[in-house]
Length: 316
Image (cartoon, rainbow, N blue to C red; front, side, top):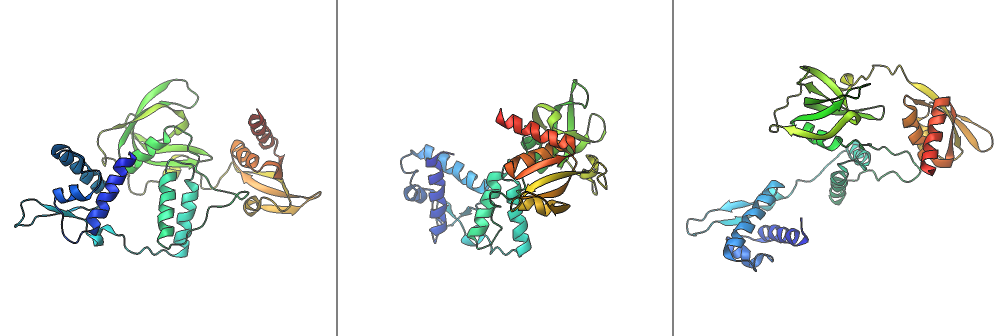
């Protein structure tokens, strides 16, 4: 949206909020900067578009018809425009702050940041972002298909995409009713109903080739009651493949890591020794590499090698 249009819409909202009586289109044309330089037809088209755009983003514009006037009047009732007082319990505010941190690098980052800003402006205290050096939660959504699938789940729309099966180079088209997008061991999956196979299925996002297309109108997908999305992508009741990594941690550093460790023992030479549960060596390597010289993975060998590969790649 251009700066000129943004200013015009803002001026229109202020004008319709400030007036004590409904204003005709001609009165609005004279009062709102941006309308006064257009001809009659151009003004009418622009005014109609602006009203529709404001209504689409939730700003209610009332049309008041006075039997003594030839033209309708317009205004915005302050009671319907303003939000009620926002009251959140401390734990609710903390959850919202944590959610905004999780989405910091994802496709919803701008919306999450804007929501936090509005809450703080309304007097709701939310957790500040975790500072440098601490453990931070992030949603890694580098899969190109993620935004389109997330929107499809939200809008309950059927999707179609090309999919490469595990251990195969062949790519086949899939038409899916999306039920949810779930993360497991650092990878993202789409859970839904596969129309081609006539059965519920899960699809790994990294195996989707090309663009995700929507099929039909929104609101047609129904998620079955009681469906377990985590079970669909293979979450066991108890993580049978969980292992333990031994990590040397510099004393006085990496407090977040220490909080998540199964055990921390005092070591020698300014180092402590921590035990961390993990399932994916590459995911563990990404975390350890981000902590730099404050950690050193001792074992198991595949976890240590994964960290070395990640650091060599960063140097290259």
